[in-house]
Length: 469
Image 1 (cartoon, rainbow, N blue to C red):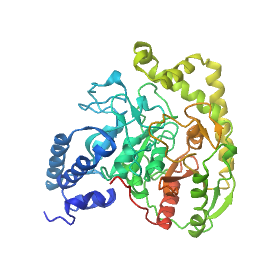
Image 2: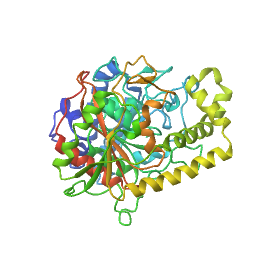
Image 3: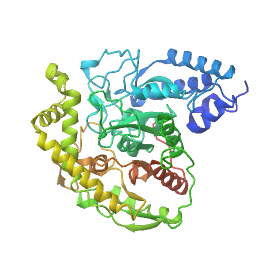
Image 4: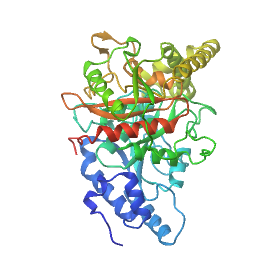
């Protein structure tokens, strides 16, 4: 088989291009997986992003993938592409720790629904990516594996909770990755590492959390280095979506004429604090949206109620997921998780019902706002990447923050209402730290979000690669 790429450069190509070349038999799955494993071996010790590696298993799967293609069998859209799953996703026969010493040696017998679907789509598991303990917090460190480092400055955090995934992508150790997002865990690390992370619409994908038959505060979702790759991965994650009846879904072309489309550009997001470097970097991008034809107006929805809604429903979710584990292993659980569970246990049924009523009222208010605007544009994060030794941000611009999640309001306000949101790299601080721009769409208009993000990405142009690689 004649290869069109040299193995040393395979990792630099987009996932979309690699998938095409594998299907065209210009590259074998073995060549692709081998190249990324070599990249992991060279780079991962510098950043600690992939915490469990199953190299032999991956190569066996790659050989089987090549045989299926050679025999003319039907293959999925991700056929032959390596992926590592967030260490919150159970993986059959592969250690899954949830970032907790309680599960240090836990090996599940079944895959999560997301992992199973990605396998059906043809992706090849190479390992697991690091996450904070139980995915709590937006700084990726835990007592099992330690901290994952930002590849643009290894003294800084990569964000979280899908931090290992974001760093693996930024370093070229993976072409695609999955993550989860309750309060920004797909978007925050993407912004901190100059990759793309998307929180899909609530309930678009099968929910991997077995603690509840219905949950939409936290979602699974895609991460990659380009919007096109994110769109491919999201479509593979949601194959059952009726694309004819729901044209706003993730499948379909990313190309669109944005001339005359009205979009809202943030003002001050209700007065919550933002670091000046974030404000400067994001505000400088307004002209890019104007250059692609958008009618950009400075306006924003009233999201003040989202704070209390999110905190109540988050605490309820922590009780559902973690209360039994906390009761049995209290000494092995970090303080912020303990606090969240205890807060949830103090909630009454009336508290939860009130939060659900307020959420529905907020969704209606935002829907009215977005009748006028197709998308809302604002910063992904309130701060740039900070010292990796700091567990969480305690103040912004001299404003003291009340809790360990207060610095993530720019993300979690939208988690409360379930709208699709994507983080796309938009530049760097004067110190060279990545900054992300967030595009929020109408309810269930995942395709519209992807289309605007793609148009912005093309107009913005390429950005420099991480220093660590």
